[in-house]
Image (tube, rainbow, N blue to C red; front, side, top):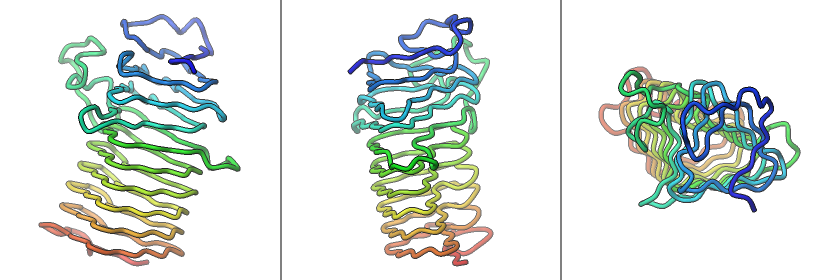
Length: 265
């Protein structure tokens, strides 16, 4: 198993702008089982760069790994994915403009600041695949993303996931998803979308949300110990052919400015 290996599609675009242990300046394909380490952090995806893991390979991130994303960059994983941090050493996905994590990585001083939508985000799996990939996340913190974390055609086990200041939170489509301890704050649109999945969500808090908190489509879902605070639109939207079991729902204070805690369509 290698620490990391990539194939540059265009060698002419591979001139490093800054010195990092692991920096991607052009579209990159990872073709074998790969481990990203804390020692090599931060992993930097420069502006408009996609890093893709091919099907059949796996990407593992060690505790303490930091990945910084440039404008409209994204990480696309078509094989198995494991990002297991610890409470003391979480795995962090954030903006290249975020100097609060491992310093001024893009060496621009205070001329730029991170904001929601700085990058496309992280895409795990592919709905067109005939097989589920395995997704494991624990103690992961994600911020300043655009599309957030998208999980398609996967068996996903997620715990201790925090999403902050992003355009979207988490979207899951096809497969199974089990989430234990999820927190989302300052999300412009939906914090969690469960679409055509069998899913369970336990211990989730959504706060200061401009969009919907949780949306469910074509799915069988159990929700337990859900806390919603300052959600501008729908708290829990249940749409089209869904079966949802909700227990221990707390709306917090204030409730909502536009709709009820639970809408059923």
